[in-house]
Picture 1: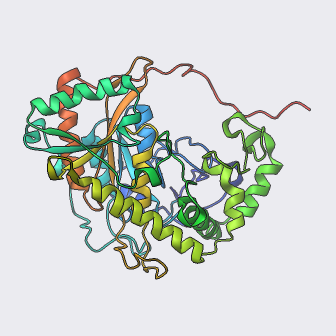
Picture 2 (picture 1 turned 30 degrees about the vertical axis):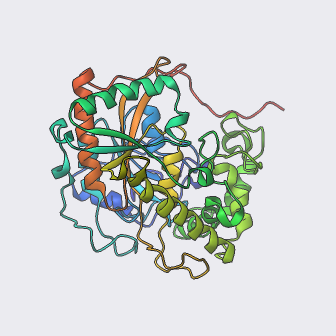
Picture 3 (picture 1 turned 90 degrees about the horizontal axis):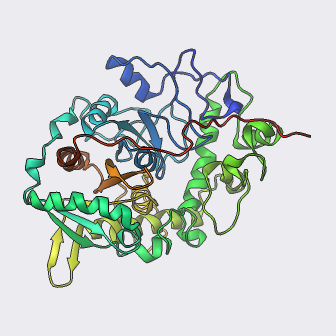
Length: 433
């Protein structure tokens, strides 16, 4: 996120060192008006992932990282917060969210940045700039009568047993508090989720793939962002790739240059890669919003929304009839639920007319909140994610804070993760000749 001061906004890349942004990101300006003191940009992996406290998510970058680090993460609906001044991947999918020690901490941060921005057309009139989302915070007493759905196929059925054991302890407490835990399913699961449950934004043919949309958006949106900078020779994605190839030791443009990105900027079929690895595919797209792009956009949205999250929230189960859930719960280390939320939440101001489901609602979405609920034996956190439709942040805050209150009753406070080699340093070095 751009800060118009002496600090650097670089997306973790030396290529943008010394560049000057035209002004604060809208989110940063709101934080300053709320009285926040911006003390620095935290480290991030290059051209992807997230900083600490506030970050951006295209697909898993807030919720995934919050889960791994054992903190609360809130990924709001696309359009809930402005992306003006944020280094983009896809303006159809990017959203600015927040991290915190507790749901309350994260919600206070969210309240400071939510609101309309005339420079970001996805921020909607329904947003109230004066809304205080802390009003939705709740205690465990509201759990009586609540119903939570567990998406099973290629989600909970693939969660490691040690993580399930941690989650089951929480589910038992929810049931003791009067809530219900019931299996549900994403009807699109076998179509949109890999057999092993892993995150894969290249899944499907080109006309059915999230990456068809992302690579096109990234080419257009990154180039637009770069065009607004001064003091930098980086004016296009092509310039960034050329810089990375030239600066082997720090940027790792080619396969084998650095362990962090083993494939460099190359593309390898059959393996989901970090966003930096896809830069050359982004260039190949040339930003063409053609028929293939339009079909992929609508296909993924329809599958993940109508046949995905919406259907799982109102599930017709065998022998129990139609059940409407207050939220979906996932233990989503592999990112399947996050990916469905990202694809369901693609936002565009104009409907496409290329598909049998043309004209489906183009409202943005879908939000997620994740909370830590314990550790399993290797010291890594176990987190539960709460999911719902677009603009249901208040609902998710209510249920996440209530379950968090229950978890704190079980174990006093969230346990501190214990990682192996956490003292290790990743210092880039040039290879010996």
